[in-house]
Image 1 (cartoon, rainbow, N blue to C red):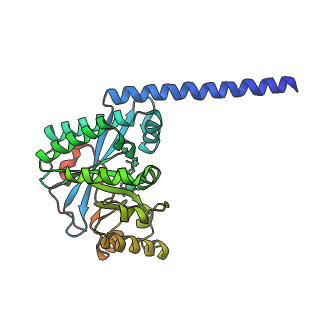
Image 2 (cartoon, helix red, strand yellow; image 1 turned 90 degrees about the horizontal axis):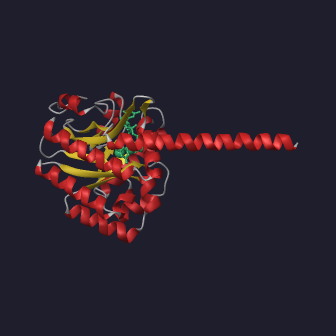
Length: 280
Ligand code: C2E
Ligand code: CA
Ligand code: CA
Ligand code: CA
């Protein structure tokens, strides 16, 4: 029995060691990737539901690692948050977007550029400074910065007084705020009243239910009506079919984002999505 216990102990030590080493090397790999700008911004167009003119673009991080292949943001973003690398990643993306907008593509005046940010950013003066400068750069080019905060992270953070003061400051800077992944299961009605969100992004699960689930449609309709009453612009995410577009247009959703119109693309491919008023 002693022998078996020792063997099990040894195996566990090995496993822990393996995860530790792998974890460390993944962390190192990610640090290097961020420093070398190997994690790059892709851009996904967002269109007005009515007439399908370009409202703006959302920045989505992409990482093709030579050894590991494509690593999904759902994997490396939470990891970056845990390892304290999310700020340097965000700064790297901002830098690259500025470079793209100066050298490769000029977005038409009036469009938005949406950046996903963890609300922990709002606590850090140097990150706030970076957002302020980025917003200033965009405004010089006739564009507006939108910060996308997910419902989950926001609810975890929420320190009401401080956040509403911060939102007021953002609005004075001309920065807009978007509540991402709305409706994904966290109590949030209260937050909508308390905070002044400019956009509400309706999570793809509700869009997905169009035509197949009357429950999902009911929830979707309610979210849209509520956002309209509270004066928020609605963006439906992950819209993939014509049926979904027609349904959403019928419900007076403001904006549509999804593969139906465009996938996230590298900056070099963004041009083709700008002049078109995409037909339904
Ligand atoms: P998100 O902010 O909700 O982004 C929308 C996700 O839906 C993106 O996944 C996008 O590629 C995907 N998508 C867009 N249209 C469609 C569609 O029609 N159908 C389907 N099935 N999917 C669609 P992605 O790029 O894999 O990003 C996943 C999540 O990772 C994002 O969710 C966001 O929370 C996070 N993320 C991505 N880039 C960044 C970043 O630069 N910073 C931060 N903090 N988070 C990021
Ligand atoms: Ca987002
Ligand atoms: Ca989302
Ligand atoms: Ca999401």
